[in-house]
Length: 382
Image (cartoon, rainbow, N blue to C red; front, side, top):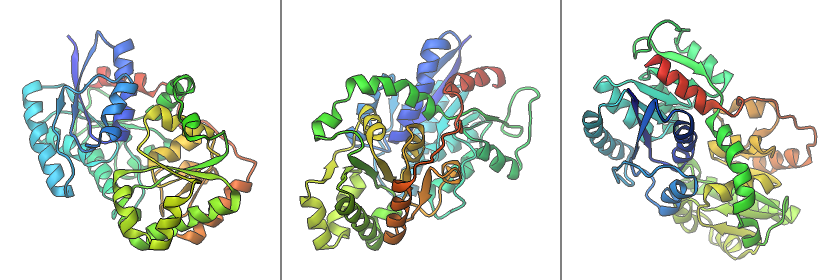
């Protein structure tokens, strides 16, 4: 008899991550696992959500809660209410959640309260900054989970420090969870879709770009978009870098950033950025286009956790627009630098990485088959 897993997605990174597990189930575990996909609707912009299901070949969601935006409390409460109803109806063997969003914490809470095992992919990551909502979500989710899959050895160490023990005997339970270092499913996806992107994406041609002629930048965290001084510092640094190097800046614009730019930036800087033909502000890009932009960029400047890793996957240096990161390995290895929202630090970090030539890329994120490992352990342990 098949085991039924409910997968919770809601934000763009989770949709992308889920494709690795969905692909493994459909190609290797179709006789053993049944997947029911629930989209919370946390990201409601078409380009931030639906397009990813189409171009990545992910099965369309069985349910969509359409919660939309809102305060953390209101949004999470709506999710819990909707998810609990689905869980009671579907009676799954486990609920699989990804990462650290409100959809993640809502799925974990709704499941554990009615005694359904929680499976957390991307467990153990820590920024050690609880002012970030994501940090609170990921810690709480880990401590509600029955199966925890961490992508890195650092994540495994973090969980051990928090009291998680090696527990290889018997079936896993919420009181006796099992923790596995499995590698990163985004590495699975990057390997799989890199070739697809090369043949299908036309974004460089569409934007009139050539390889290594531009900086790829993404800015979306509220600590950067909702504080005028921080946004001013970041865009001022990007403009100065562009002016100094001649590199274009490609900025797939997050809805929050787009709504805040005119409000938060000084009139002079907003005018410069908006009218410069070297600042290519584009709508949110599909995953195949993002991969193409990452693979061909000279350098990446971002506050996105996902792009930090993907920069490493595609051997690109990265300036991180945050004071800390959960992906400490790439910083410790010299592939990325933390710059926060300081213009001085951004400029210094860029100059250092731009001049650096002795990068190394050890196998920090597994062998590219994390999804199969996760499916095997779900079947063994639940």
